[in-house]
Length: 515
Image (cartoon, rainbow, N blue to C red; front, side, top):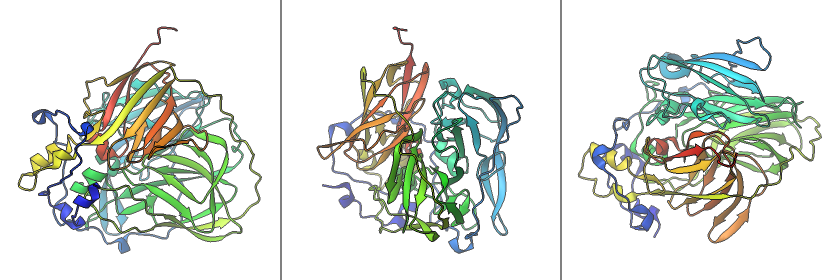
């Protein structure tokens, strides 16, 4: 019996905290022991009941897309990037006559884009001017663990730290940066903290093309243009802000050319994007970790939360088009949605002749794995039982023990898995829940080898490097990877509310005794 058949709740009722959640599925992976007295639930806050949202008609729209601001390199040395980032509260007037409080990097919404080259030395001094701890996680960038903004390494309120790392050779790709503090990553991203991070090769198959960035985020504003806390449904499914922005703008006008290399980022906490431009095709040329083997023509471009891609556009002739996101059913809890298409932007496309290379990147032959790991994603719905007559604190405890990896909620001090430097491994990621979950691992890029769903095994469509990948309900993915730095890494669901609620694990990477 499907979970959905037991959820006859109206979305409006989700603002109320007195909700019982029943699920008949009683399988072995749902039983675990949690000490509720030791759960930290102080980070779980709920929006007021009957919260009124901002009228979309008063949000500025239809303006020409602006380029992302750049983080300025203060260094004059070759192959050396030095910059400063202040993390602070800022007030901005998105809506005429109403100032919205954001968390910002260098006072900017959207955040400054970082551009560096392979083999550059990067030094960024970060000052935390917030009233709470934070970090900067360089999502997907191959940096040592102690420089990667782990929750174990917070920058406390009023303090600063220097992040210093060298960009590895052959790691050109489309990355991003965002906070990763314990328990409050989702809050800080929803308040505005996310920025693009591009690593360039000195020369690649497409380095002669002009580029454009499309950074997609979403925003929820109440009637006073303030960013609100989560509802219960946001904690359960991940927060989807009602205003979907591109480079910080609502429904902008975008001019593109068929000779432009476009980098696109899903910088939302939980929104799935299934992009379409009617009358045009996407030419996929890159994923999270850089160029793929050869160009692929696609009618739609699917991006789960935290995923990125590079593409060009193919059209029979230039003209006016619309960028849309088609409905994707990820089987949300306590929500019954009518499928709808989301309009994102008007696009004017100029057709210019271009001859794409048949090969974009040559991949080395796959190494055979020497170790294997299994990660099971699950949801303990029994934690939601009997809450109709209970209070807010009981609901918070249920949420904080509901989302599991290998039958456990996250413990900052516990080592869940261990690997050795340079050892090739296959990770088997199994989703035994009823909802899609995007899997992300720190410190490496992996290749999808195969997926298994409903007993059918499907090999990867093409070779590509990724750090985030969606796992559908009852799906099993085989990912091949290796870690190149000793230290502590995280792996987790990249629906940020689920990460905060404990759907995360610690990986200890140890020296390889054979070296």
